[in-house]
Structure formats: C-alpha cells, structure tokens
Image 1 (cartoon, one colour):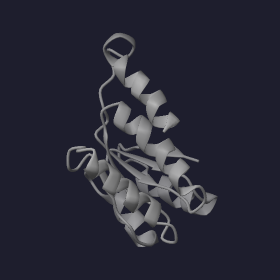
Image 2: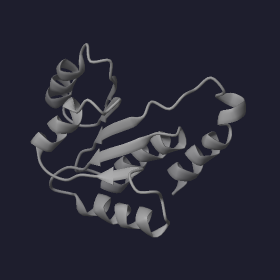
Image 3: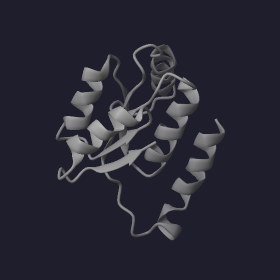
Image 4: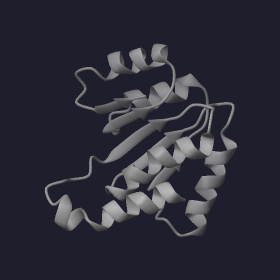
Length: 131
C-alpha cells in the first residue's frame, strides 16, 4: 500500500514538477516468483502514477497474488484495460516483449532471460528496464 501511496503523491505533482512528461503508453511487466505482491507493487504503482497502462505477467508458479490484485482493481472500479494480468510460462512473456503495442518492458528475473529480452527489444524503439 505504501508504494501506491508514494507514487500517487508523484502523480499529484505531474502538472507542476513533471510538466514536460508524457506517458509512455502500455508497459509490459514481467515479475519473478519471489515476493509476488511487492514485485507487483514496485512495477504497477509507478507505471499507473505516470499515466500508463500495464500488462503484468507474474511467474507461472505464483499467479494467484496478481489475479487477486486484478479483482481488487475491478472492485475499486479501475477502468477496464488499465491493469491487465496475463498468466503463463515464458512463451507468454515472450509475446509481451515482442508485441508491437507494448511501449516499454520492465523485467525482473534472471540474467539469462534479461539478455534475451534486451536482444529482442534492440532497435525496436521500446524502452527497457532490467533488474
């Protein structure tokens, strides 16, 4: 909750402190199995605060936290399409990385997969953050 509260504060300052900022668009986010709720918050909160939408893929072994978060988003009447949760294995992650409608990839995971994502996004114009 604190991550969302913190980033909501930045969203309130967009007109004054970030006046030249424009949202990127759709942020593809891929998170690992450890700390599923915290990883989700670290990815989703700043993206939403800056006016983006997200497509988040949790690790295939720990999808329930993210799916429950999607239910919470629906319960608070977040508009459809703002937070999107997709589940599955690495092939689903690869589809997110390669989708032409995704403007940025935010990945936390292994170095090996990070290298593959970097190669896949090179020259695509997509923004990329790797952890």
